[in-house]
Image (tube, rainbow, N blue to C red):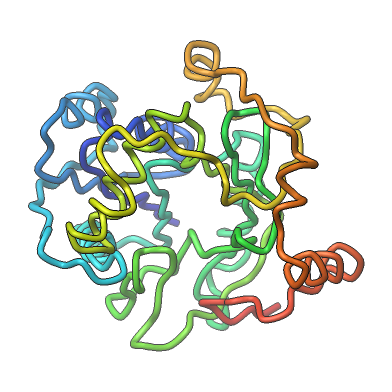
Length: 292
């Protein structure tokens, strides 16, 4: 069974992406790892080269900044990395530059790949998500945040990244996936106000025109942390690869979770209550088809 990890990145330093930690978190279960490094203006390439693993395969890409529709540039870059995967690969393991996998889940993931390798009804594996928000001490948990996503795929040339690279499609249809008891730790919203404001501004350049950016996200904007709806204090442990980064960069996020919850509209509060009671998210978007 051959497993290839893949991802894309550009300007990880400027935007404070833990891409090295992302790669290292799944490298133990990968036979190779393809990373598409875009035309950076910082030392992201040196960071990736510094991993110094024979498993790492770097491809150099140029991002198309003219596309301002729905983050499609991210899907294009994901597809470039996917296309460079060795053709004898069985499973393709996708990880984004702000995601990590806890080492405790690696045996679970490897076992799931082994057990479903010859199951033609399973085309991918579905992960659960923890969305860290503000600091490494809180998780955003509400209808605003997706609960699951596909991160492991049976390697097939018909697979392509979908929309803004959140998920995948195979020959234009939803992929049949099996849920597994493993989490992706998503760190994309863990930064102090000034840093997160800069990152959000750069991110939105792939969704909106410059006039929209200037109006809604001016230079030196400080993020106001108003889009979480509900926060829960994290009581678990972070992946080992993240420990040093957390010790150096974690900051005291001053927030009252109860006040944030009060900002939710009545409609969202009712829908959230239904989900909490019956684990049923009404109208949940699913870019996949679950199978057993």
